[in-house]
Image 1: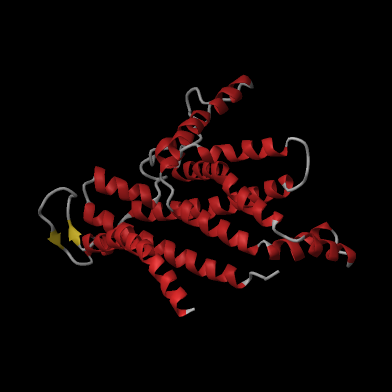
Image 2 (image 1 turned 180 degrees about the vertical axis):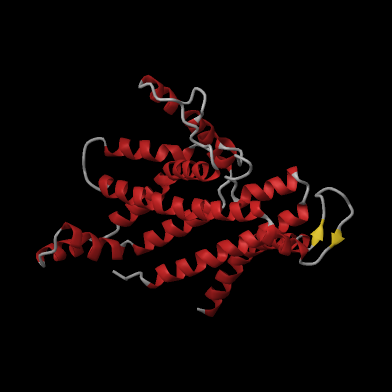
Length: 289
């Protein structure tokens, strides 16, 4: 047994080395750069301590990007899980054309976020947008759907939720098909109605799937980038940017590589502080069957 454990440990060493090389090393280097003032390409770097972190307290764009990141993360997670679970419950039933519906609902996730954003932008454009064209048929003046940072953030969240809903659908569908039918049959024999069966049997047994879907969606929402670039470009006036997009703008457009690294460090710890407790809380509610 000890020899087998040593073999298993040895097999994990290559993966650990790769993780340290591609994740650990960039993280440490990013933390190091956050204490410097650097434009990203010059050989001269000035050590300024925690000045970059102090600067964030008075950076309005940082706070608006943080707010948007929270909306993207929690908003996308909520919508994707509701839509994903609803469609999974529907597709878990047997009916003609079920496989075709599954493919149609999953197809958007196969398209890159940037291309999907470009497609959906034509629906909400002020000039010649699909929605405004439809409103024009009824004599309604065009609406600037993404006029403010908040409206742009909400529309981008809806677009992202629709695109990645298929991932949640597959996770929940796999979880539903893994639930033994005897539990539902026992609940019906005890007089449970449909809602009681769903809340007292299905949901508790779906907690592993819920954990996977929620944590995956949270991390993906917090890191949202491509859809924002395609649909709003961070506008208007950088008010729909996420922290990921703000880091890119700071590094490549504003040439503030040190400050961008500091924002990246804060973003990393923010995601970790939010997702780890949620993951632990959901794990405690998993039941064995």
